[in-house]
Amino acid sequence: MGLAMAPRLLDDLARARTVVLVSGTNGKTTTTAMIAAGWGRDVATNQTGSNMPAGHVAALAASQSSSVVLEVDEGWMTNVVPATKPRVITLLNLSRDQLDRSNEVRQISERWRSVLTGNDGVTVVANANDPLVVYAAELASNVAWCDIPTPWNTDAVSCPRCTLPLRFNNNSWWSECGFSKPLKMVTTLHEELVVRGTSLPLDLRLPGAFNEANAAMALTALSYLNVDLTEALARVNALESVAGRFSLRRWRGHQLRLLLAKNPAGFTAMLNTLRADGGDVWVAINARVADGRDPSWLYDVPFERLRGHRVYCFGDRRLDLATRLDYAGVDYVVVHDEALLPPSNDVINVLANYTAFQDWREKSGPC
View (cartoon, rainbow, N blue to C red):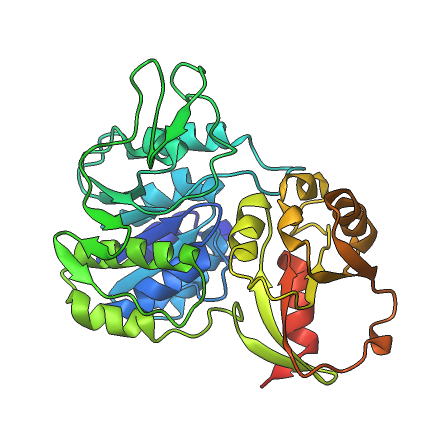
């Protein structure tokens, strides 16, 4: 309503504030929370994940803080960057999401490139291992390249400059036309995290290598705000959950760990966090408006990694999931009546896409 009455309301609310934007297909909410926590002060932020202009306006209207960090939907960057005039933009990754309505990812990369080219007033913290992010950011005036683990490159198989195949090998990538991974890194994350020459001992409570990568990006962004990195690291390390993600919950005699996974790249990252102990895994898939109506992306998820586990299939599209697991040779159970599940003493990992995650969060309680 506010934007309908005052189209420049976001511009007005952002004026005279120090703004950090975070965008990408996966990790926006967590990285935004890490920056907000690491900043070590009152920060205006859209912590509920409402990442389009209406959510940005609500976040800025609710706080008078001069420090702002906002996650931004990939498709809205060309609107939000000019409106907020950010000090730092953090670009995580680009991959397919919500197949029924989202643009092809290369179009998103082109749109990012158009708004980032030149733009002297902003530092772009960019993932150097994602070719589509590099293409988007390479003409920005000030780029801080981050060499972080990025195992998913299936959506960047051809060069965004010349369309020839991209080659990936030994933590590098290149095209025959000369487009390649940048050489000069501000941040590296291999055996240790080094941000602008400072070694930082990551000891995250949040699980997974992908969260270490998110933390590397967050701490790099904070370094351009003159935040003490040692103090910021302690605050980032202490985060235990973000908007319910990675939280422990109780439900009908079960202890659950809720993991959000909404597309092939996100599912692949979450599967990498599971221990090879043969424990039961619950997977919940919906295909509602917020998820995208097309669940064919399930066939790009490497569910073969769940062999040796028993997988319980939940959600509106549990039969689609079961079919995919059958092709993958995974032992599965289709759950038609949740009340029939026997209690368990083990912590069960629940991997759920967007609305299925919200369903489980609402019907479970805190431990």
